[in-house]
Every structure is written in C-alpha cells, then in structure tokens.
Amino acid sequence: MTKISTHLASRLFWLVFGLGLGAVQVLDGMRLGLAGPLISGLGFALIGVTGFMQPVVLGRPVGSVLYTLNDAIVGPERLRTGLAVSSFACLFVGLILKYVVKV
Image: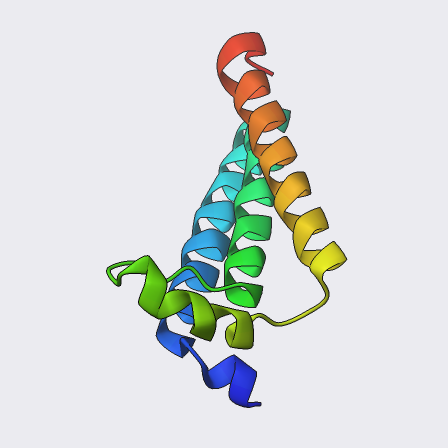
C-alpha cells in the first residue's frame, strides 16, 4: 500500500486525465459511428492506466526524483511496457483513421 501512496497526486492526475480524455473520445466515436476516435480513446485510457502504474512527476530535478520513482512503480515491467506500447499504437492508428482516412 505504501507504493500506491507514493506520488498519489500524480497517479490520480494521470489516471483521471487519461480515462477522462479516453471516455470523451470513445463517446464521440460511438455518437458519430467512427472507428478512429474509438481506437484513440482506448489509447488515452491505456495511457491513464500506465501513468497510474508508473507515475510521471513533473517540476522536480531528475536526480532527486529517480531514486523515489523506482520505489513508486507498481506492477511488473512487462505489463507496463505492454500497456505503453499498446497505448501509443492505439493512439497512432486512431489518429491516422480519424484525420487521414476519416473513418
């Protein structure tokens, strides 16, 4: 439980930011019947989950934060890496479908 409480404000910010932006995109895609916003919304939601598992701390010098970030990471490395790669793949495909193909 101490890992979750480390950088809790940053964790909650990224979780709410990603899930909120993802929900807006998914609802927009469902309303318009487009696949692009649905896929990019899924990518934003995955970014929120990744940001919760591995918090991003802004505004502090890198040297003072590195040793505490390793203690704050939750979950196995493969899961975090898989979430990060799949979120960026969903964002990339979703944005291509939305703005280039217009599907």
